Image (tube, one colour):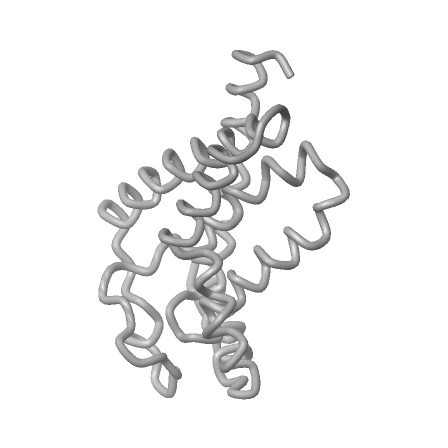
Length: 173
């Protein structure tokens, strides 16, 4: 476990010290925020129809259930954010004070993107790139360890897949 933590810290410092990435990452990180992901998925649910609407509904369900799991994990597996623990860690102004594991922003962006990646394979590259950039932004901004981001991506994809299975079994598309 000690070696894994050391690798996590090493990778964190590799990306966290890249100040040239800072400006873009401050903007891209919001794509994984609760406000953006919720509004976007609800907008598509309300103002589309057919397969797009069903996929957006799957994405919304995925967002809701994955968020609940993230809240539970953060409560029962508390982990201090890296800027509180690691010397020389860069962090943005007004950082979050809650626990680090798993990354909620990363979970959110993967949970809403994954159903669209499955149903619309032509969107895999842009959506996966966006989701990965959001995850990377959380490290660059000093808010998460790489393992927090990896766990968030895994949870998001899992719930994206499960919600899509649920909706497809109910609606049969």
